Length: 329
Image (cartoon, rainbow, N blue to C red):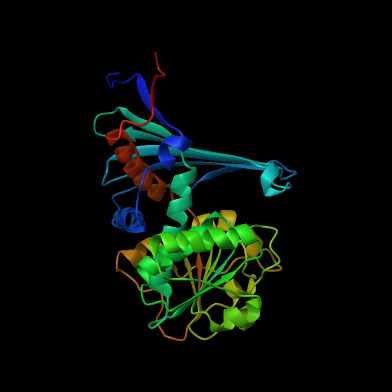
């Protein structure tokens, strides 16, 4: 089918699942998106949120423009059953891409794999920029999708990490973390820890990826001087944020939307010292002293989804994947 202004290529979960993309490729794509945003070449407006009073669901809408790829996109995210177990929840996220040079649609795709790769890439970039010099021990909390992908990305940006620690309780999840690590870094293994406090005291970098029902909650008093804590999901107590010497966020505005569970007794969050795009661009440095304890909040910016989504669309189109639909005819 010829591509025209009535045709849209739809890329399903299975279309995207078979695409091979390395952590390095993902990191390069995401980092470029941050650099372009910091330089003023991209647009990333604040996300819109809808949540009913009883909190049973949440929906987000995000619009953005990538100035390097000259692509406009809209991302939507909807989760239903927030009070239910993960198995009973419904979650849908999509990304629609448009070529801002030709004015033609590029693709609409399931955004779950894009998000699952973008998030650990951002955590790894935060770790690279925030970790104290000579950082050698990393602790990952949680064995879900983000926990499974965290270590390969961390080792890509911090190849000198010597000890890899994992806090998790699900045997299948632990096995999946090990399998994913071995796939990208054969010969490397992870130590499963039972004492979270002791592990936190040894870690230079902590990435908290656990689900909302986790009992894990690293306290600020457990951290060694110079430690970097990165919050993706759950696993860090609010004290790690409020007692941090430096607070870094991918976006302060996004942190105030999605980080309310880290607020203090008065419902307040501390000011952010720096945002990641400014650090990536080289304008500022995440830490100003070796022994500072740095807290980093990883929330999504749609420009990174656009960049990575466009990369996936390129790979899929090259391989003839997807279904072309005459949506507007």
